[in-house]
Length: 190
Image (cartoon, rainbow, N blue to C red; front, side, top):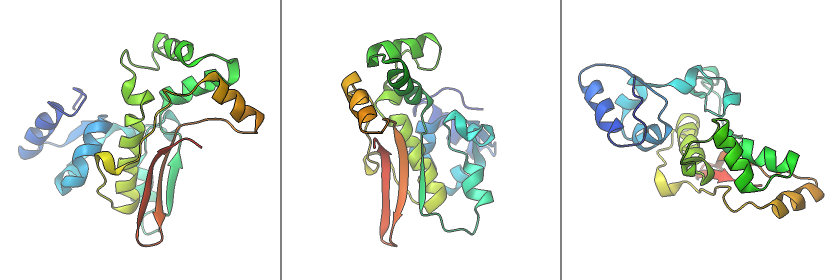
């Protein structure tokens, strides 16, 4: 089980285990997003822990794409894939909190890390889009190939404007088939 987090040294640990015939369980989305497309060995012998979590927890459920929908053509994968940003935006919407106060509360309650940048800058959502895109479409997207936009710049006035026009602001992870020519992908804010 890999619990180191980040790409390095976790990648070295997992690759060493795989070379020795040991299967690996990990919750490391950043690592899976950066490494999984490059190796069939990674896909078949590394099991993301998210496969046992409920989708509502904000984690991709690979079993859905790889088993339940086997043989089906998937045209779009979309959803709220990050619990931290969902909590912050919900607090801003329902209670009128500003971004800094909502983030501070999320950290105090353990919903956000001490360094929340992976969540609030959209890196976590982009990693989940990569994983879901790989499962749904067989893509090998990595890094800058995925459009990414976080919630750091969202202000109370943005939340209010969205409310007045009948909308709410959420960070969405989206990967969509565009004809047969390619994939449109990335976390987006509607």
